[in-house]
Each structure stands twice: as C-alpha cells, then as structure tokens.
Length: 110
Length: 115
Image: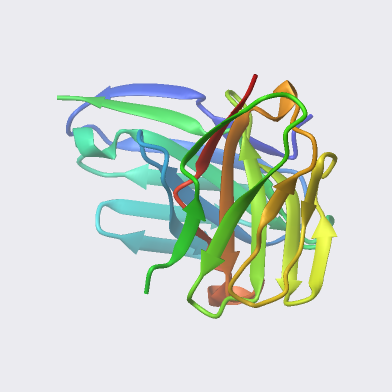
C-alpha cells in the first residue's frame, strides 16, 4: 500500500465547477505539501500545511491531522487550472524525507 | 533571483555513456535534492544534501553520484547510462526542512533519453 494516496487519479470538469482533490497518508508527518505541475512540466509549490486551512486566491487547502487526510479545493475553476496536482508529506518515519503521491490530473473544459 | 536552474533541458545518451546534470540555486538554500519522474509514478528521490559537503542516498540512488562542494551547486552524475535511466530529472531546493522554510523550489527539469 502506498504511504500517500491521491484521489481521483484523473478528473475532468466544466469551467466554473468546484473541484476537490483528496490526499490520504499513513505515516506520521511534520507537514503536507500541495504542488502543481503544469502541462509544460514545471513544478510549483502551492501550499505547505501542518494544521488547519490555507487559502490563496481560488485555491483552498485543508488538513485533518487526526484523520491523516488533506483536500485541495479549487473554486470557480478555469481552463488554466488544468494541471497535475501533487500531494507530498514530510515524513517523520522516513528521516524527514518527502513522500510523494502519484498526482491527480485535472482537465477543466471551457 | 534566477531560482533553481538546471542544464541541459534535453539530453540523449547511448548506453554506457556518462554525463553530469547540473543544478544551481541562488537562494542560499541548505537543502537540495534530485528526483526522477517516470510516467504514472510519483517523484522518486535519488540523492539529497542538507548542506555543503553533506550528501545522502534517497530511494533510488543506484547508478547515480552526487557531490555538494558549494551551497549553490548540486550536480548529478550518471556513471554508465542505462535505458532504465530514461526519465525526467528534477532538482529541488528549500531553505530547510522546518516550517515555512520548507517551501520547495523546483528547477525546470531535464528530459533524458538513453538509447
């Protein structure tokens, strides 16, 4: 079983829809990261969370430490949000290395 | 700041050839790492460094060497290229592993093909 699981693997939605991407993990963590990989390949950090909720523009990230679960939400989605969204956890069980999810490929249709 | 730079962007090698992928950052980050990304898989850590002169192995270190003689540079050497090393390679850095200083900065990637 992977230590970091993302769902769904693929998501296609219409412009304007509310998007939720989930990340579950099975290890003890000090922080959880959400990153975005553009179609051209570049990877950009979106959020780093250790508790609660963070918001940046139309993106919201939440984490529930007790349930070992995080969600990334996109409000009023737009075609430019089309990308792969990656969850990674800073694992206390693995010498504080980052453990990566496989990513969620999001396509927003106009 | 240029951020994290990687060269080359593309490279084709023949089996058995050696080469060095370059990575540099100008943000005075202590922590640097090399990942490979293969289709359908998450990023996998090859080697990492927590400061100049200190390196350690990640999840998939075989066939790769690193060194960290300065804070800025963290080159990745392929000793004898194999087709299994065909992948996209990313270099990343962060100021530290703690708190808000753990924000990851990635280079643009190197697409390597080994024939």
